[in-house]
Image (tube, helix red, strand yellow):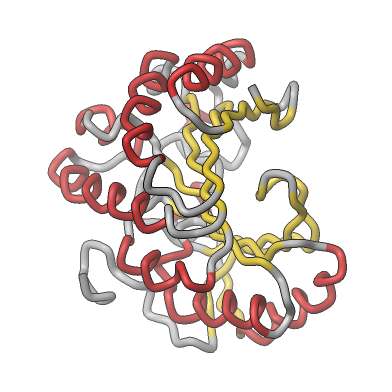
Length: 270
């Protein structure tokens, strides 16, 4: 799949510049068991109605920044973090500056590298696996349920049918990294305990292909004020007991570590 494919299009930006919303010098929540310098990129090719970062995903929060500015900030934080982590939005939409920043952080600063992705660009992920130490990949719904996945990512089923095989490719490509974190958010009225069970059954088929550590994280939906969709901005967060129940169900199916992540209890292994 070429990088300029329109459906999975790249944001028109050179290696020297990248569109971002901002960064956090030291984060303790983006890579399990590790600290990170976390960079938020702008734009996303999904339209999840419940997205907590929907303003930056739509490009409403963005600034065009030279990569040297980011590198300077990472250098200042390098002694205090384990990882350089890029999230979004969807980082793989800006392949050239993303690859440059990951490579520099790894080869020049000695940091481990990480991205969070929706899995829509397997070509990009495959190109990056040699310089990635950690991938956090969202499996937003059962991969065999096009209707459900369509609702969760806010796209027509005709497009979702094209994305799902690519998400599967991305999971397979990410299995080559030393640490893969598969994640699903339990959104009220969209993803429930039964959906988590179905996802776990599907993911089990991939685990034997892993080259390193693989974990599955069940996340609580939180109605952050920056969600653009009013329905989800005003919705109550997922009950932590439901998140724990779902994680316990997944742990009975999967031969890997399963975690639940909630405001009430933090990130907890089942």
